Each structure stands twice: as C-alpha cells, then as structure tokens.
Amino acid sequence: MSDTTLPAPRNALRAAQLKELRGFAKRFARNPLGMVGLFIVLLLLFCAAFAPWIATHDPYLPTLTARLSAPSAEYWFGADELGRDIYSRLVYGSRLTLLIVGLVIVSSAPIGLLIGVVSGTVGGWVDAVFMRITDVFLAVPKLLLALAFVAALGPGIVNAALAITLTAWPPYARLARAEALIVRNSDYVAAIRLAGGSEFRIIVFHVIPMCLSSVIVRMTFDMAGIILTAAGLGFIGLGAQPPLPEWGAMISTGRKFIFDQWWVATIPGAAIFIVSLGFNLLGDALRDLLDPHLRQRN
Amino acid sequence: MMIEIKDLSVTFGSSTAVRNASFSVAEGESFGLVGESGSGKSTILRTIMGLNWNWSGTIRVADLDPARTPRKTLARVVQMVFQDPYASLHPRYVIGHQIAEPMVINAIPNVQRRTAELLDLIGLPADFQFRYPHELSGGQRQRVAIARALALSPRVLLLDEPTSALDVSIQAEILNLLNRLRRELNLTFVLVSHDLAVISYMCERLMVMRNAAPVETLTREQLRAGDVADGYSRQLLAAS
Image (cartoon, rainbow over all chains, first blue to last red; front, side, top):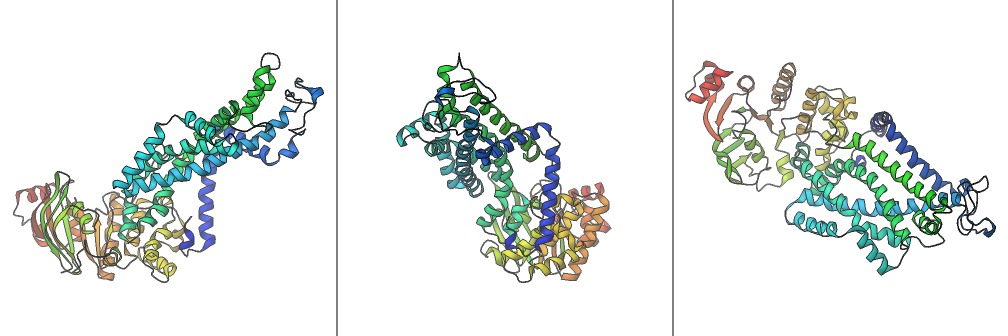
C-alpha cells in the first residue's frame, strides 16, 4: 500500500497486515464451495505453469495412426482428427486461456477503475463526460463489437483479448463510480480534505482502496465470462488460430465428429465448463467476504 | 475573538439549513451549539471547515476567512472531530497511519515520534498504532479521531456530537479527555450536541438552535439556574 510514505516501523506494520490476511484466509476457508473454486483455479494455474511436465505428448505432433482414437491408457482423453493427444492439448490450452483472461483483466479492470473513481470523486462535467462514454460502450453488443474488431485487425489471441477488453471495462467504471460516490462523502475522506490532502491523494490512497474489493469480486466473475467469450471467438475461428490448442477452437474442430467421436468436442467443452464454474465459485465466496453491501459494519 | 460568525446562512438547493446565525467564541473558550437533529448545528461546523459551498455571511477563524485561505494554512488553525467514530476512520489503514497522515501531508518532521506522543496524549498505548480500526472499541476510535485532529496542533477544535455514538460510561471518559486537552493545549472548542447535560458540562456559553435558526445565547450559569428567556429553550431544559 502507501506505507512507503509513512515512516512506521516496517516489521510491526507487516505483522499487523499479515494478521489481517490470516483472518481473511480463515474466514475464506469456512466456505467449502469457495475452496472448491479456489482449487479449480489453482489447478488451472498449476497446469499452465508446468504444462511440459504434466503433458504426456507433444500437443502439436500429429500421429496419423492414432487418428480419432478413443480414450485409452495411451491417450487419456482420446486423440483428435490429426491424432494429437487431447489431454496434452488441454494442458497446453490452459496457458492460452490464462493468457487471454490475464490480458483482458490487466487492461480492462484498471481502465474501468480509474475512469470510475475519477468520475465519482471529482463529479461535475468530468463525471458527465466519462459516464456518457461508458454508456456508449455499454450499449454496443459485446460479441458483435469483438467480431467487428477481430475482423478488422485479423484473428489472433491478442486481437481477441483487445476486442474483449473494449467491451469489458465499462462495468468496472460503473462499479467504481458507485463506490466512489459513497466514499467521497465519508468522514474519513473529509478528514483528509481538512488536513489539506490533495484530490490526487484522496483518489489514490483513500477512494481506490475502498473500491478494490468490489472490483476484485467483479473481476473473478468476469474471468468466467471472458473464458466463454474467448472460447466463442475461437469456435467461430476468430480467436486463436490452428494449430494452437485453444479450447474453443478445439470444440470447433471436434464438431464434425460429435456423433461418432464425442470426446473430441466434449472434453474441451467440459474443461471450459469446469474452469468457468471454478471462477464463479471463487467469485461468490469472495463476494461474501468483500462486498461492502453484504458485509456488516465492523 | 478566535471565531466570529456573522449572519451565516447555508442553503442546500431550495432548503435552508442555517438561517442568520451569529456568534463569537473567545480564545480558550468552549462554546456549545444545542438543538434537536436537523436544526443546522452540524452544518455550521462543516461550513466553518469549508465542506459546504452555498453559504453567505462572514466567517472568521483566527482572523482567517476559510473561503479564501489555502487549505493547508487553515488546517493548522482549525480541525474537526466527527460524530460517528465508526465512519471517520479509514477501514483499510492502521491507526498510526491515520494519525500520521495529516502530518505527512503538511510535511511535518519527526512524524513517527509525534504519532507516539499523540497516542500517549489521548491515553492509548503506543503499540495501538499497528491496529486496524475494527480492532478498536467505539471510545478508542473516537480517541484516535481526536488524535488525528490534533496532529497538526490546531488552536480550534470543532466537535460534532463527539460522544453521541458512544455509550454513557465511555461518554464521560471522552468528555474528560477533551476537557483535559483543552486545558493542556489551550484549545478553543465549538461543541455541537443535542444533549444539554453534555453542553452544560463542557461549555461556558451556548447557543440554542431550532429549525435552522438560532433561538438564544446563554451562559452556563444561566442554563444551570434555569434563567432562560425563550419558550423552546425552557422546553429543552425541562426535557433533559
């Protein structure tokens, strides 16, 4: 946090912060569904980080003799139309999924947060201008704008992420503004104002920390949506391009064999489902702990 | 005079929150504003601090016009303690940080030592600076809020119902603390309360307000002797 500006003894302060964190972890651990969500998300992170060690085959190497083979000891989840191991492609695909989610979150949440907080704290015409811009972006159909954007810039993972960002930030701006409107009139902000604190200090050190919890909750929920949108773009061929093992693209190629070799499309579909569910469960648990409207005053 | 208010009127949109209030407070004096909720007492304090914009009349605090004085200059002359100690501390920062922040903003040296001194002054142990507000009781929080208000060594403290959110036994502690601080630091107080007993304990003079307008100004002796001219004040006195 901003503690670099204040000369409090580091260790005692860190101990106090650690204690807060431990209390939070303890309360989080009481929610079993939240723990399931956390486990799924951690599993995803683990797969992405250690993909080369977890995977059993090369995700790009075709083995034409094993074309469309059923799940077996050799191919745990079967093989696709080029004889590539679906399990290994899933594992490597988690990297692409995380990459897209990461890119979108890292770009959209800070933009939305900043616009919302400035808008809510400063008010007046700044608020009016920022919020009308937000309204315009909110009015555009999400997938349609992403489609148009990708069509214009060409398909690819980064372009897909950019396209999703374009429509993902306005909800953050709305959320942060609503929080900022409450916080800016609070007594603790008034106290900083009375001490001569600048608007910059108020926004960065006092309003933003109070908006962060809602934004983090929203972010977790959004990750599920982003995975689905990215998979959708991959499915219609505007996201990751072959031979990248993106889950949506994998479903798309498996579509042709869905009646005879169901596993080619179903397994990546199940992966998308489980990961989205994981993020949703995690988000739900975080909201129970962090949402200022659910949390009682302490 | 430390504080001089003349014909102060404050409006919020079409409604008038304060109408033609005038009073003055001498240096070292404790002045009370009393009245039921919605009578405009807190609004007067917030207007003196420059938290309201739509006002007319004159305000002078130590010969400064709050509307024309740079915020940091004013901050070292007058500070305010808010009513609800549960809402006046930032929930995400340890209290040492919150007491120190006004000093950091105003580039005061030896912040750390002064934070410890302030904690000592308000009667909390020094290791409390590493606690979060939710680890403190209401009375302790209000002490912290007082320490934060004193961080810039102001000459005037505006107290907006400083004890109304606390239970009775803690109220007395906080009031005694305030009285001690006023003596030791030679502070001037303006205290807002709906409780005549608190006002009579704390203030040498007081102004009764009703429906946004001042009713009358009394001394503590008049109050205690029941020497009250206005009917509303008498009603208030009888009720307490």
